[in-house]
Length: 103
Image 1: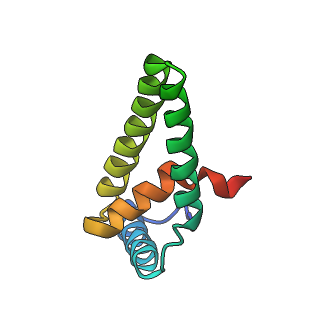
Image 2: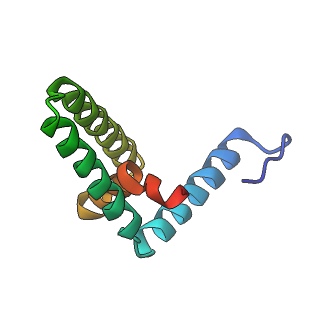
């Protein structure tokens, strides 16, 4: 985003809104790669099953709650960003379980 301190506020707001709309449309049109998120969800499910199998039901509930909270926060953030429907769910899923891609 370009910033000019001598630019009137109304022109700056209109320019920023246009830039946000361009980025939103570009984000909606690009395909989502969910492969790392699928791996992260599988690893999370495996850890939850192992914790439950070893009798650590409270720990598994805490881990599941953290992931549920993270998904809910990501979905709310993405919804507030103007993305709705299936694409919003996919983006929230990638934001929650896509941490595998950073390894």
